Amino acid sequence: MSRAGLDKDPREVAEMFDGVAQGYDRTNSVMTLGFDRRWREWSRRVLDARPGERVLDLAAGTAVSTVEYAASGAWCVAADFSLGMLLGGAHRPVPKVAADALHLPFADDSFDAVTVSFGLRNFNDTEAALREMCRVVRPGGRLVVCEVSTPTFRPFRFVYMRYLLKVLPVVARFVSSNPAAYQYLAESMRTWPDQRALAETVARAGWEDVAWLNLTGGVVALHKGTKPSGNRK
Image 1 (cartoon, rainbow, N blue to C red):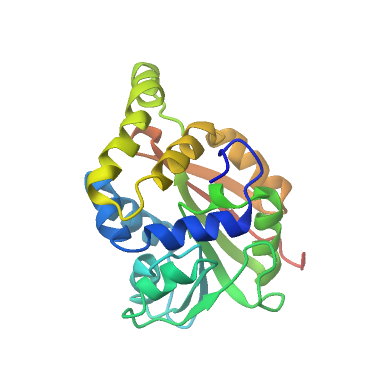
Image 2: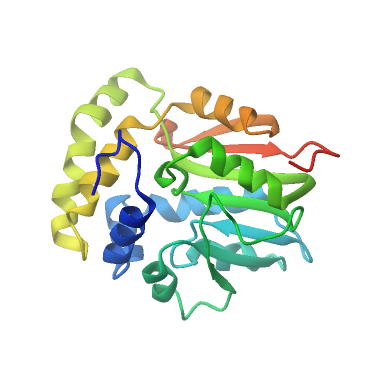
């Protein structure tokens, strides 16, 4: 797998996620000490999907989050470019689509909201992906991104960046079906932009009213935005 700081080859990234699909949900829970459930709950609250709305859950993996959004009564589709991940969630009762985030197979203004959890940093062009998400959301529609971020407490930030991220690949040896992939994932977390830098990227991609909410001391952050009314791009 290419280093996280270099251009990400979509084929390589898809193959990597195919390799971790088996036991992926269990691995996430172990490696986040169960915080993944809390982060999904906050994502659901901020997304605030309503009955009858159409929601695109991009980089949905095994569709764990998609099912939770659909419980609101919204029509939710799970999209991912890893067939292995989608197959891993085949038992979950939501529609699933194999899709490239940079070339989504949906018409303009197809959705009321789009969300992506822990997948944005794996796209090889973050801003282009955010523009494509804006295209498929109706004017006035919503974006919610849940992604790793930069801890706000300086002493913890030092420990997190210097030591804790190095532990992830070690733990993965015991719980993941493809431990080597977590070396890439840990590096992608270390090199990912902080909260403000990501918010600026979201705004450049065409979203307005961009804001973020820190979770777990900034280890994770929720970014949200709105598609300008009358802007179809």
